Image: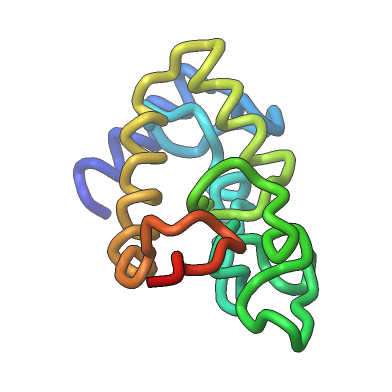
Length: 139
């Protein structure tokens, strides 16, 4: 057992703290008050997804007319050029966002930034500045 693991165990026994999302007792000393189970339930979005809004196709089925775009993006519904998320919106992710925004758990800002940077590293190439659903200008 490492010194860090032993220290975490001692701190969690002497000063038990609840997970700020689910309420379970935290088993390690961490500057982010979220348990491993809640972190694990934040599920990353994977391909296939709309090339414009980033919604997974199991939530927004694609059609033959415009492969790669969901129905809303084909209709130019959104006013943004591109959007990406790193995970499905669920209770754990919503709780983490609330902790960052309203309870000022600023360490979560670093955690979110690392996840979003990974999304850009993986999927950032090929994102054009053309508006979703728009066609290139005629020359």
